[in-house]
Length: 418
Ligand code: ADP
Ligand code: ASP
Ligand code: MG
Image 1: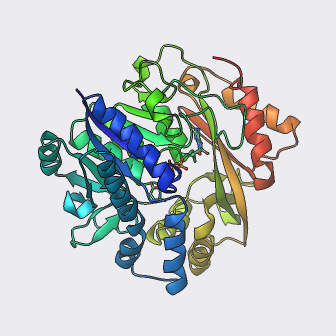
Image 2: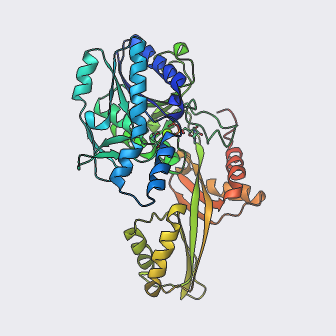
Image 3: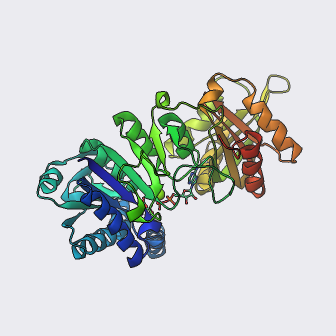
């Protein structure tokens, strides 16, 4: 007997038929003798609809009320799954974040889980009850509902698995695992049997939305065995032990991966904006003068490129921010024009950051150079580059997204059998 946390995303609970399918997955695990907590997302599209309503009602709104609105989608699916399980003869009860409670910090809209009290759930497992938990939500220090940021149900599931000391956390979604890149963009993408926590963290932070970044952090810190698998597989045909036979991807320690590739995957993130400040004085303190006020205004600056100055006195500074922050960033820079002393500000929105990720980069030279060559051959201009130990990222125009992802995917041989 094992204690399992199963998580089902929006497309897996998109209508009553799919909720019945989820219930059959849950029943299979219960029938195999396991104790089960299930975390559900809102039905596909529901959260977007709720966010749009909040914006329509008032473009600038109170984050606590935003949370109370957008958390409601998960309440519906938790209740629906509980009654569907009951109708199948499985004892089940739904739980909202505050009822457990899942305590968060005060950052409404992007709250972090601080603690989970698992006592009542464990007591209910002993009575033979399945717990159906609304994902994406907790309760803040102000005693109000707080949501965990988009995609946050993954984090609810992994955090719960850590708090309950579960044997496994299965993330069921609309793909049967983590792929070498988004299979919606590159049909030749391949499923990875295993991926290290570190690589998954990079993939998620650089745009692969199959897992929320914080869920991967949490899994890494607490050593939660996390498995990504498809909810569309026929429940009855699946063995309860996913490591035995089933397709899927295990997120695990690097040591548990035998076949190590230099490059593991390609990720991309849309909606990036580029800002260039031309002819900035090249003196100590200039970066602080630019990025200090942006940080104070909560603008998330990502890539930063400083050109070599022509004569040692003036330089160009280029950096990226999310599209949504562009207007705010320009306003902040213009307000600080005197302190910064730039001559001209230029900006471009709607760019894409494509990233190549792999542990093998730590020990192989020239991995990035191969990408530059491959993109140049296809006429794709690289506007900015950043590198770190196990990844590099390239900023390009959005019209080249598919071409760049597919080119890099092929360049590193990711479409071939491992
Ligand atoms: P859920 O609603 O189940 O949480 P998401 O839509 O959040 O599902 O995440 C699953 C989607 O992530 C897939 O449909 C796929 O298009 C996308 N995705 C992006 N990159 C990858 C990747 N490397 N591997 C698998 N899926 C990916
Ligand atoms: N329903 C929320 C969202 O769409 C949380 C999730 O799906 O994980 O962001
Ligand atoms: Mg998701």
